[in-house]
Length: 70
View 1 (tube, rainbow, N blue to C red):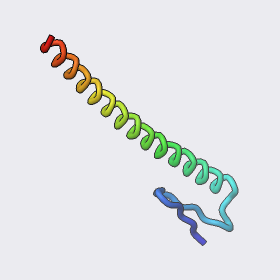
View 2: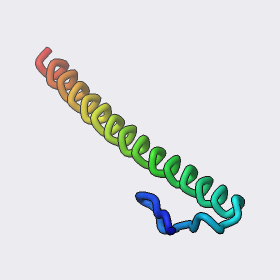
View 3: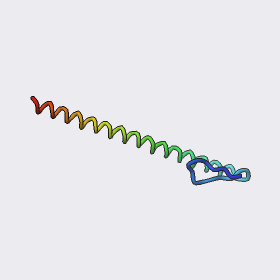
View 4: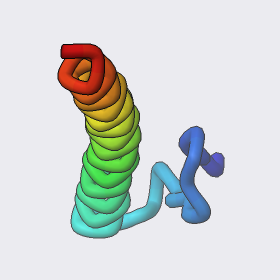
């Protein structure tokens, strides 16, 4: 019987496969899931940084407008 896991490009066979092959496949899946989580976290951080910089630019613009009025 062949088992495949979501978001992976590998499969392993059981029964008949050595336990080491199953362990390697599961470890590879664990690393890959960690990698995908890291990518998602970086996307969230990038979006937050972008919003922060946009707010800073708006604030700077308001300060400059008020300074010019006075």
